[in-house]
Length: 164
Image (tube, rainbow, N blue to C red; front, side):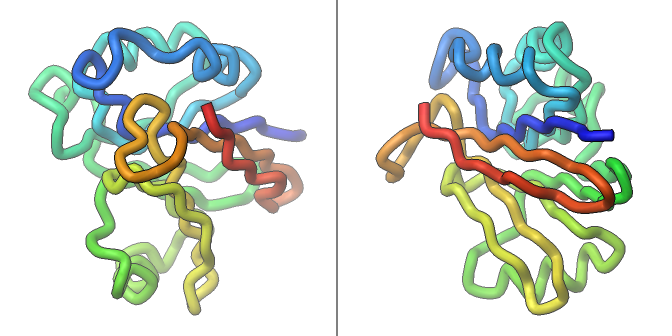
């Protein structure tokens, strides 16, 4: 079986946008699971995404009590034999690989956000680090972004950074 993923983070609604961009909603409709790495800001974004696909999410540093009451700080799920972890912040990039290897020794993939900077690397310990950027706030990036991926036969494949 193939599981189609949409990875998003840092939607910051309504601060950076009034609603999810149409391409995010369309990608959610095509996904089996949406993974959101925090900073929703409004719980209505969780409700919106949940109408399009199943959602696995965490809260971020900009999320208030309404979001924190519904989501954990960190989440884990086995998807088709790939062990995923999700968290909002991983700290500065300088020592990220060592910190995440130590903090997530039982994960194959860590999805995170906070920086709004897309990231796709592998740590020395073999942990795949994915940050989809932000679909609403590009900060210092040329475009707003999200990621898509497929999981099949205990492998993550076709990880794509999608510019909006």
